[in-house]
Image (tube, rainbow, N blue to C red):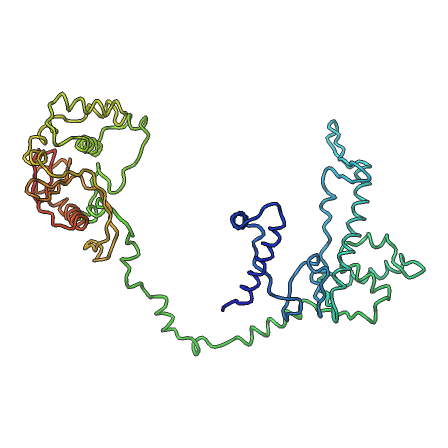
Length: 458
């Protein structure tokens, strides 16, 4: 199977984890699975098993600490010129387990600060210990190679490096060993290795190669010269022109929404937006902010829809009962008192007296505010399929088993043809969605205009 070796190693690692788990006070498959899930969710200790052995023919990149206990035929020690990290000795307060506490002294009157003797002592001891630790790490790096060790580093001034030989001659002891004072003066692996070379101890074992910066620059220039070619002969400009002037053939799909609302489709159809009515979702505002806003026709229409939604069409209402219904909405804090006063009860009474309301009293089934979502093709979007969502105001099945769809409109219009032209497409989408949902034909479609107090048949 693909990655078969890794799969086997992971199974073996799972087996080993299970063995270790059984040695604890917990036991059982359920608890073990819970443990694995917690480790996985915590992103800890869930790495894959290692399938590459030490003898594999690969190049490994690792830190010196990770290489402890390992050996390789050829080892590269890179960036040997990098200075060791002594930033911990530059903090305002230094601590040492033997020397003690070393703060920075601050003279507030003279507005100056300087290190105390205790801090200087800790700094000297800390630097010696850091250098000693880095030398031990360097020893680990130098002893990982079996056959060949390559040390790389960069220096800015090669002549300045030769001055170290004079320093070695000054500080070198009689037995040929380097003076510790000289070792403390330098703080990089490369400088320590240089000091040993200048002592003459490793002349036969080490081979030094010096490469100047201009050598690499010459190679880069030669590579650039080899890449030169004639644009006119080797470049197809006609093809480049076709690539840069290419246009996406289905450009209409770029702005095509994946999901839309019936209100937005109405806006595309009419190509205009009513100043009082916006397509899609209405802006939600805090009630304290709404009370200070002017009562718009769109808000009045929303309030009228809300009352129609709360009506029980199987019941006959008096004007007092309609007022009680509106006051109950105020009591429930669904609408405010100012909003309640803007609701025209006379228009509600006109609607309840229509023939369609009389049919609803005897209807077999009445459904209000039914949401739907369907995928269909739209002419407004060049026949592309789009998911449409919307909410039908009301539909019912009368005594004759006729399915009737009704939608309330509060637009201020002069003639019923205005509403027909504006909302015909919307009602046809409602009709199609209802037919798909109920798997039957819609027999009648109506718009009721609260402005004209008229029932309009489509």
